[in-house]
Image (cartoon, rainbow, N blue to C red; front, side, top):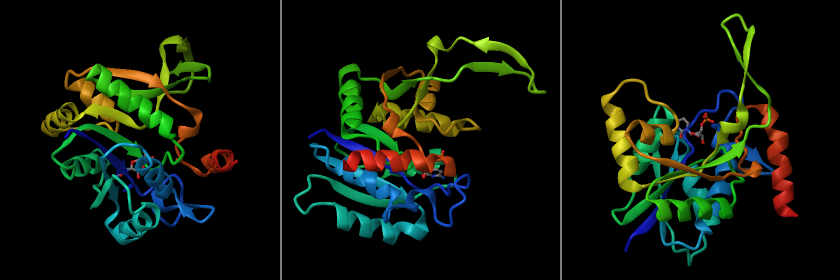
Length: 234
Ligand code: C5P
């Protein structure tokens, strides 16, 4: 039976955060960031395979989190694999570990711990409806300027056709695997899976993203995540 696969990438060092643990293992109120995504993904009512891509040093810690979070009756299989030096390599290692029945794949950043179950479902439904790539997008709120090398403003950019994109990003499995294999043949690889798919000739649609899928990048993001943690608990 065809099923859902999720590659949860959690193997980044998170240098911009400046913490003494890899970013996905930074604790918010005593819970590692990656735990929130594991909980929401395995709560989805799908028979699925979750592959968590973690730093080798944190494989055992990841398995303990899975044991603590996953109900015994869960319809999800969960595996943990070691990550790569770059995000695209971590995604590739995760893809390689997916079970053979998986036909639809989501790639999600553990650094976005509060992406909601509704967002996951929106992406899954749209991948299955369109047979194409699907990414969550939100409006750009800041005024955008194009500047030159000296930082002098050259023009204001029309933001009506621009969006900021988030994860989970979803794809038919064959489309994402093809994009990653094609990319191996070429040099520099982008971190964004949707861009790999587009470069490989694929189409990528958008669905409405959400503010709570905010990504932890630097310490300034922590109060934003604290806000969503409190809002979810309320
Ligand atoms: O560093 P950045 O926030 O762009 O990373 C996005 C996601 O990719 C994070 O969840 C991070 O753990 C993951 N990643 C990874 N392997 C890497 C680099 C990043 O799994 N080598």
